[in-house]
Length: 99
Length: 195
Image (cartoon, one colour):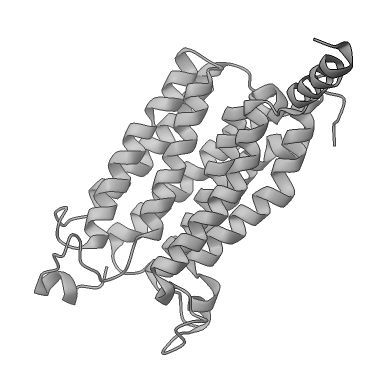
């Protein structure tokens, strides 16, 4: 095979190998979307659990505790506040970051 | 302002437990060394347990349905605060022996037993009764993971199992309603008796 062809192909395969994320990073990154998805699926299955969609007879507490929205909120908070730091620390083998 | 309905308090508690579960699950995935590389993450679980205990005292004060409910919520509040305090000392390095995990196991056992004892109705009396039994046994089974941590420390399976315990309890608490059938069953008495 010509080296003009093999060279770029090998480099491409190497690059693809190097950008593949470790399973642990993928697992941490998947927690947030899976949690958010659970909340959305729940909201679709039981829309009456969301006070904004079914306002009859609802009080302040019903607006504070809307199960599906709370699940989405927890997923968002994990994805924005916890997961990025964990991924950074996983990818940094020296472990220099201490905040 | 009137106190929230029990189901509202249970859904909010489920949200806190979901946070617990996800944090613990991520700790199981990345390993304790990486997880505790940032100080705030190391302190989050014990701090949430202590703050959760404070809120449980508040619920104990508002939960005036019966003496059983008062005692059960007070027991959970104490268990959460003791377990949180021990975890704080472990993270801080004041306590080092793995056997201190047995305190967490004891807290889970006490919590599970309180669920089982204070629910006086059978499994299929109503959804609330079913969930009290289910949560009680899940917590009793979940106590095995901290016991495992005490006997054979630093294995991911204990942290993962501990995390899943909280996630399952969160799901069960989200399913709770003050008055609702379970598998289509809700007798006249079950429907009439607010928990």
